[in-house]
Length: 615
Image (tube, rainbow, N blue to C red; front, top):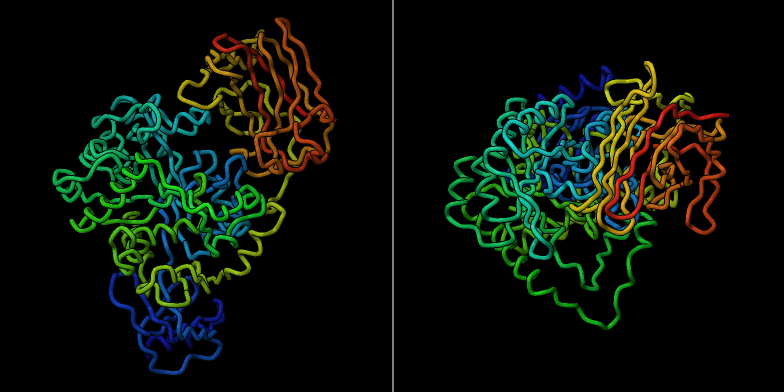
């Protein structure tokens, strides 16, 4: 410790870094599973500089935190989240507020499965520049089989890559690695919990090819695997982490043997499967829900008692919790993930709840804390950098009141959070979450020309990637879009649709105005949009904006014919269904959607060219 204090003095004299932080008096849980002990932890810059007994006075200028009666832990991990989702049905997520909810709960590292390759850069830039504050995020490329889970959302081919053979798997994984994902998520298992027809599943050969290519590129593979048979295939294929818990049967000796041989980690996401039909609403949750999400919650029932879950769901829950215990007792590493962002599984809080559910499943509080820190860090391959408290590691730390190693619910009593040595106050984070306004994002003017369809790489004149979208479901409409010759060297974009046999089928081509349609475009200096069009379809222009939280986008219909025409669509023609909808400012635009629809089971087509704003 004397050497440490000399280092502190040297750093303070140089003045090149923020004042050192000395945390004294806390019960320190270092994340390794060792018992808590009262110790002093010193942070210099972004890293832990010392951990042990304080034997000399702190240097001048050091910030001293008296943490007597509190517990200091490494920052928590959540290995399965959907950060852009809100966890409230019908309400689009506020990414900035969702990030703050994790930090407010002491969660400093998450895996996000709600992104696709175009979003990596803008999201990483917003975090790197400090425009938005959030945990360390590992962004994923998603893969599934044709007709498999992950493909039914209507989000298009770019959101989830489809692979059905080893050859496809190798090619798609190599393409995916070019975008530098932090992890790869593979939907390997199509079981729908006995509540709906099963979807397709991935075979061993295809999954093995993904794993081989991903590991050659230094990227770990996480899965969606929910059955015993699927888990055996995934573990044999060498995936790094089985996610979602085995819910159709009890695990057996064969699976345990395979997982041990391959070093497979298990993540149960109990928080998303927990039956939420009761009346209890934890006090900690109130500060973590933004107003638009909180408004969707039904009032707690009075005097109705706690409803019983359906028998099939109760049976699955018994498998899920029992399998956590059996695998843990067999020596399989159990890490923490939640599927937060799915309905009723709230960001930040779900991570704390997951650890409580691990304890209810048979782990001790200390074992659950270790699962949420060092075991999860090892599963991600970042244990050398974080996940435990030790000199040289990143200062991702949380202070909580109480003794969570004895009473796991004390983990909800977050007092201070440090991300790379920078303190984030839970009260300030929760105040920002409670604001009635969405998280502020900068809006920048864009040039009038959006797309003349002349680029051969699938991108617009704004250098944004065109994206396809359809109605939801495995039985969704099919579409194809590609440039075709309009005349001479001039091209148009041809959109062809085979509309599904369902009510109100549709397809869309999305033209983002910023990369990934994430940051905001200011089009307020224009008065409308013009485009050349012909076709046979019912058509609409929809404008995706930041301020609209649901599916009721600004929209206007137009009628293409077999002959080319130029449509001039003034912004005043764009309407929403909502009564008393505010006037659109034009400053929060994200993308233009061109939608085709028609009777179920029919075909539709449209050619589009020269999309541009006018003044």
